Image (cartoon, rainbow, N blue to C red; front, side, top):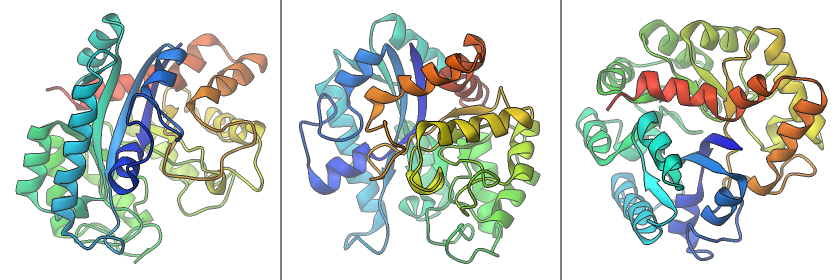
Length: 312
């Protein structure tokens, strides 16, 4: 099976806790051995830290986490390739390796600064969440300053990302910030790890209007495995409800995966890590959804968006 997942916090986990044996094998939700067992896997690894937790400047934390990521990719070069484009990911799969992409969760790790954004791009970062749960110089978040949309600095940041060839990630963004992004962008965006607010009314999830705007934009929304965003004491079928609702809106080409692996604790019953993600595919096939639709969710939709947005 081919899989392309839009979000994990594995690098942050290693940086902060130094748990397990790194990318190859860990006690967390995701590692290279389990990726290989699933088939061909591509993964966006997020660099993430919250300002309330850190004593160091966040730019310094970004640099430290980048070193952890590069160290792990180099140490496991027999299993994984650092990729920046869809073509590189597909070449990694052809070579029998997994594909590692790099993202930043919360532009405050880049000091919301255009020069540091460009430095991050040169280092290989290909997606940035404009905010995490805190508002910053770019926008409000879904938790903090919910009524604040993009600032002028935020607009310049989004324009620069599109110019460079980076995916604008709207998960965690305030609702006004989301609509400001939609008005600005000309290339596909993604909500890397957000579910449907109509199915489960959490502010981290997308409204139907927002998901429809992502469809019109040509982007994707990645299913988040965090139980808080799926339902009350959720099962796999509750996760499927999010998929089916988005199908009902015409979104079959605009759903992807964004597990939030290693960044969450609770998940739908029956899912405890990437080794269980096949259960979602199996359930959709049991419900008579076509293999093409399932493959779209599992890799093709996000791969298309990366191909269109990340050209170099």
